[in-house]
Image 1 (tube, rainbow, N blue to C red):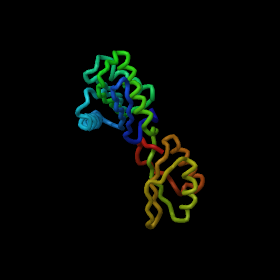
Image 2 (cartoon, rainbow, N blue to C red):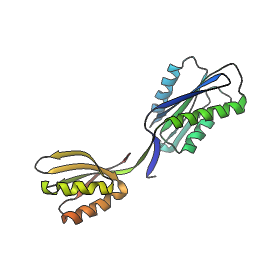
Image 3 (cartoon, rainbow, N blue to C red):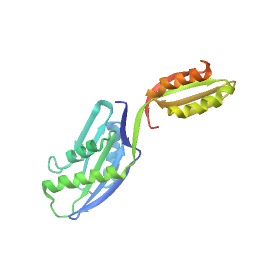
Image 4 (tube, one colour):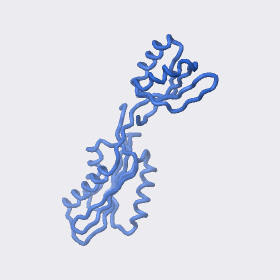
Length: 206
């Protein structure tokens, strides 16, 4: 997998169904520990609520987990998990907290309500795509700096850091699949005087 979709930051929404209030939240998480911390914050904030149903999907280890948190089996966590799957998101946790309003919703009503809550949370968040990128270092004499700077955007490269000492040193990030194209372009444009030294592969948003 050379790219995946997640969210940029926590987001939330809410709705009322037959006097039951549903508070819906989503957070970017990268581990079970981060998910647990997010859920702990939600439960602390809504300590007097009856249920905080949740689900999460993690890219590392291809992990999934959900909980009905006391609701009838299959009416909470699974619908929330299915919404995350359909949205194509990973490294996220969705929590839907319910304040009971005195009217029973029934299994079907609960399933629809929790799915709706998860969908609202997903819709409230800003999506972001991470793709496989390459970080590399490019060193050059000062007269070649302008030429190299003009080439970089053509290959989707962003300058992460620069230093100007005896020569110019740039640290750049670009989509991994464009690295060899950039190297070839640098070689052609500078007669082999400037090269891109590979540093690391990283998932990042460009």
